[in-house]
Image (tube, rainbow, N blue to C red):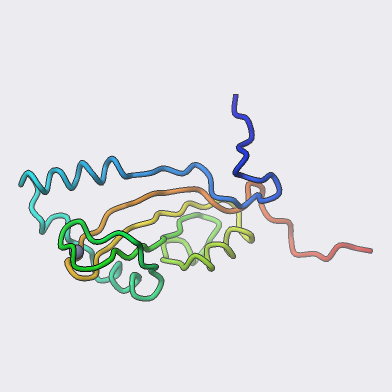
Amino acid sequence: MAAPSPDTPAWDEAAPRQVVDYALRRRARLAEVDSGRIGVGEVCDANPYLLTAASFHGTTSDAACPICRKEALTLVSWVFGDRLGQASGSARSAAEIEQLAHNHAEFSVHVVEVCRTCHWNHLVRSYVSGLKSPPPRTRKMAK
Ligand SMILES: [Zn+2]
């Protein structure tokens, strides 16, 4: 039986949930590169769209790139959801996601790390955000 989590206040309906961490998969991927089973070119394949998103919406992480070690990784958050309309499938800043979360029904967020030097990229984590119940129509409370 799922008890309400203490770190997800009941009043914040839009708090991130169903968080999936991809650290293990990432480590496995890097081990494959180390062992030579996967070429660096196969994992350093960030497309131009991701690289552009990294410069406009990315946040710099504390971690250095595991492949080239030349620069800090940039984290880019992508939002996906039927209810987001045109925003679905786009990269968003933390502030924008916060805003979307309080104004839209559930959507998923995929956080991808990318190195702008060697183009290494990997999914870091995913989670669900947005309102559990659809937002009420914008109407003022009658007094
Ligand atoms: Zn790199």
